[in-house]
Image (cartoon, rainbow, N blue to C red; front, side, top):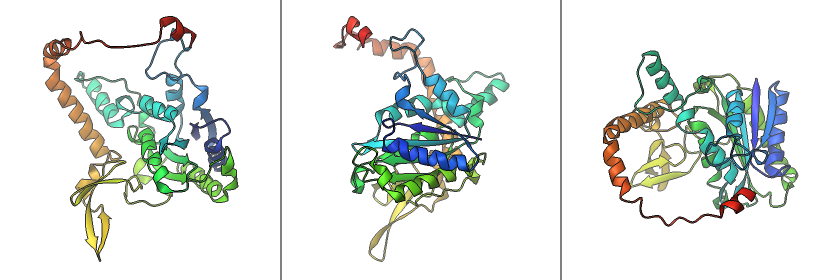
Amino acid sequence: MRVLGLSAGNPDGSAELVLRVALQAAEAEDAEVALVRLHDLELPTRPVGPGHPAGGDDGPWLWDQLMESDGLIVATPIYSRTIAGTLKLVADRLAGPAADIAFAENYRRMLEAGETPPVAFPYDERVFRPRVAGFIAVGGALSSQWKSLALPLMHQMTFSAHIAVADQLLVGGAGMPRSVVLDARALVAAARVGRSVAGQLGRAFEDVEYRGEPGLCPLCHLSVVTVSGQALECATCGAGGRLVVEEGAARVRFDDPDGLKRSVATLDEKRAHFAEVQETAATQGPLAEEIARRAAAYAAFDRRIAPQAGRRAIA
């Protein structure tokens, strides 16, 4: 089975080095491994044809690499508390309706029944293939507030395609280029990520065991939450919980099954989201002419600026 590694950092930088450690460990578990440097790819912000001045679009190639893999390990440096922009772009390109397993299962059902979906997105049968993922984020800061948004955003890579996250690692203190090699604990933990993924390839989502550091949320295993009164929500996956006071201290509880079903990591919520999108489209579809009429009222307000065409071609 194959594990795909995605490096969002500088070539041979700290993030890529720990990714290599993880992939080495995965290979030792008899997995075939491959490493893709996102810096090597042409990835425009939206799909384009071969005539694009930048030379094309490697997004479809990257999609095929993911679809032909059984495991995924992603490593990124941390910039300003969050992940590298190249990885954000990849997440936007690879996630969403086209990768959503609930969308795919409903499209397949509709097409088999001869029905036409109100909103159609391309879907790929390979999205049903079970996959396991691991995340590694590497930053220079030691304090938690400079790293807190990295792992939550990496989960966008796996929600849509219902990829089970087996492990995740947050590394700090790598302030100098490649200095992560001085951190023996980080290297050991990176190898653990590789084993956690490779050792569970082929397992169904519900059978994958999480083997990373525990967090408050029982589904995504992270601890970033939003609070409204006594109700709270996991900011990473949306699981609903509650805030309680026990022995004078605030505690977080995720003990309501219905609250857990709100998580975007669950098929229940993915299916509910598909129904919501289709219902919205069915309601708004007949209003296409009214939408166009109202939108036209703003068309005359045009204050765009852009580089000269010649400069863009050179770039």
